[in-house]
Image 1 (cartoon, helix red, strand yellow):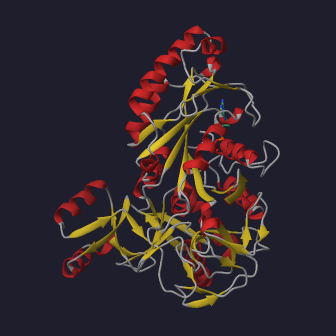
Image 2 (cartoon, protein in one colour; image 1 turned 90 degrees about the horizontal axis):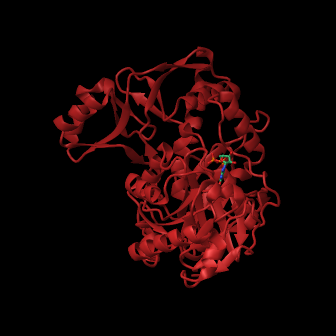
Image 3 (cartoon, rainbow, N blue to C red; image 1 turned 135 degrees about the vertical axis):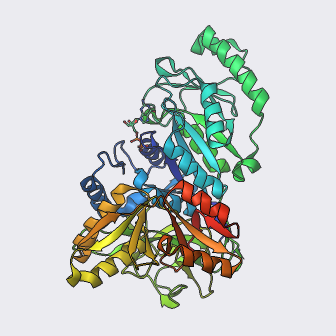
Length: 527
Ligand code: GDP
């Protein structure tokens, strides 16, 4: 238990949202609170505005220079906060899903005008798979949003999440007057573009006090009294245990762009958000308090500058102390590795660090030794489990346009898929190489990078598949039989696991019905 103090002061989380809900804006406000940046506008959105490869490339090139945007570390009231960035574009959702395996909790931003949107749903599904604790921030209260009760009901229903309001809004849009902090029993009055100060907070222990009428007017005061009575009656005090189990999500109302409601959320976050958690491995439960170092790679960032072809592997520390220049065990390669320039991302700058602790993310220079899911230890052989691959939904056959560059193409495909850009399958009948992605944009990126970085020229030919499912069975004979009959629909993923490629939902359902001994999985754990 050597590192208890270091562990206890860390919180590692991600902000998730549908694009445009306000993730970048909220990130920036949090960094301002943490003193990590001084001015608004310093955080660049990682959003792809046009559906264009060039746009993506531009963003990636900038990020290559300042990889710091992938992890932001800042301190607030003695707590060391690691905020992991997630890609904004849905075509890169897999990257986000994997980042979620490296955090201990999330903040979900919802636009009060649009309510629950597509990406919100998908991201929450992933959080639910891991019972990740969630805090909800309902943003843009300065706009005419949905009725507050309807909104909460929509979120609860659509995301199958039990909510627990921590603050309660007084109106919305141009009549937005602020929020009532249900926990601290104080009124926080809205002023646009507020600084991080407590000036506009009025303590009102008893809502029947006339001061409330003075501050917000009689009509709104009465509405608030009724609302609070109702809300208090339904919800009571927050059950922090239930939050930590991912069963109940505290909710805050605010306006990120006006820096309103953010501080209330951040204060609660550092009070209740989970410490770096213990994890499961392929052989045993790993306690976060163990003395020996371990960690895993959840993201690989390629530098797209052709002059600097290095990559940075992002490693989440899971136990012990990571030290610069010390030899560690790379489990998959069964090899000793050491890192002379590990990076941390304090104050948005890359700094070489000497040590890191559970909850921290370290950036490691990589010349091709890492792939997603790799585990580094002090000698023990195990893998962290629960790092998922999701079934892709778009499939294209790789067509080599330059037979002289076959080797380069193969190398490029292997490395890019190691980075987790896409998944690579080899079809049984015919040995075709198939790339599976979640978004069209990924194919363009792969094609561009194959050419730029490997000098290989490839085209993609669409394949009529709708989903890839990993198949397993207790009965090896049944599995063999199935793969023999369905050769054209069977492929192996990069690790040799069997995959069934379904042409349509109907085919998939039919096969599932006809083959009750075979299990069809929509996610595969890398280990
Ligand atoms: P992201 O795509 O989730 O990162 O969203 P951004 O943070 O880039 O915000 C999208 C747009 O919403 C930007 O134009 C922001 O200025 C705006 N925005 C963010 N927060 C608020 C808010 O509280 N009120 C209003 N009216 N606009 C906001």
